[in-house]
Image 1 (cartoon, one colour):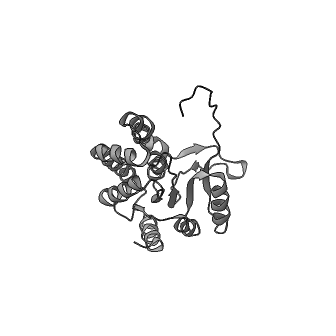
Image 2 (spheres, rainbow, N blue to C red):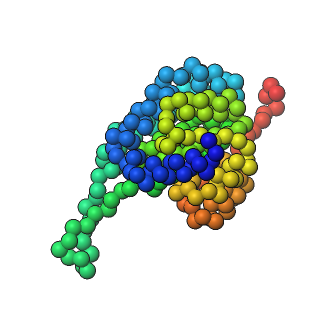
Image 3 (cartoon, rainbow, N blue to C red):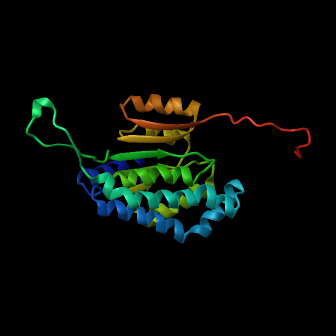
Length: 224
């Protein structure tokens, strides 16, 4: 589905209030957990193909983190959704005042190649738990994981709630220029600057989780 049509579909779904209930949010998270559990073998294969990750490393740095995030969100959703009573200002004495926590709307997630499963789906856990819709743009560098995510998300989720768009940096630039309600980007500082500049054209709020150089000491006896 073309990116703008997918966003329009999700926007209609959100405006109709389909994603707002506690029941829906929990269903999204349990579906995500089922998707991971039922396809662990395929996930291990994809990450081995892309990054030569062992099953142990995939479990500890990708899958295990996601299971923990999902369980934590499921445990706390009802508490997070509760209205918070706050004191009345002097100008409104005699009234009852609340902070009401509401979803933002349509969320774009752009994920990197180094943890291509965890950093694609961990932000989605938070977004879905908060009652938003999600469009995920996985990294095109890790092709096996990208293909698997596209297949599984299309199989387990209706596009009006959670969809995937694939492609290169041109597609990412196109997505960032669209009118999302929030953007979550993980990647390099240089690309992060471009994402922030592009998002500012629509005043789209965003989170940038940026990486950089990771210096290492190579000793004389290292077997290179």
